[in-house]
Amino acid sequence: MASGVATVRTQRVQQNYMAILVAAIACFLLEAGWYSYFMQAWLNGIGRTSEWLHSAAGYNPALQFGTALLMAAFRWAALRRAASHRMGTPVSADQRKDRS
Image 1 (cartoon, rainbow, N blue to C red):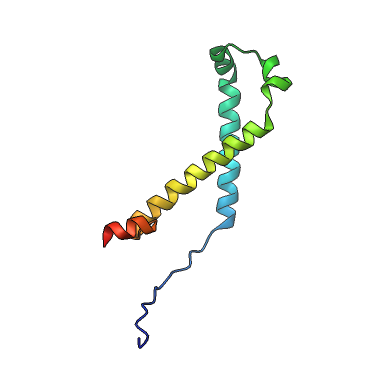
Image 2: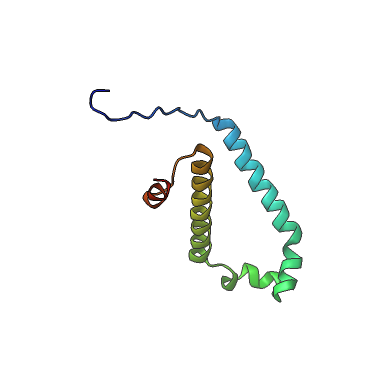
């Protein structure tokens, strides 16, 4: 390397899209069953009725989307951090300074 620039070798990950689709469907069905089975106990625990849940008061799309987006961001950050530690590469510039 005449230029003095190190090259990084990357490996392309192959994804099994059928497995991802089956896992997503299985997760959806498991969660639907879980929440259906424990819905009445949860409603009793928070002091609400199923009528409240199906009314406009129990339905807030903005809150549902916002919390789903927040949880996705937390999962992304956790997976990114776990992957970087496993591969031995720092996550941010601050961590690069710490390793120097």
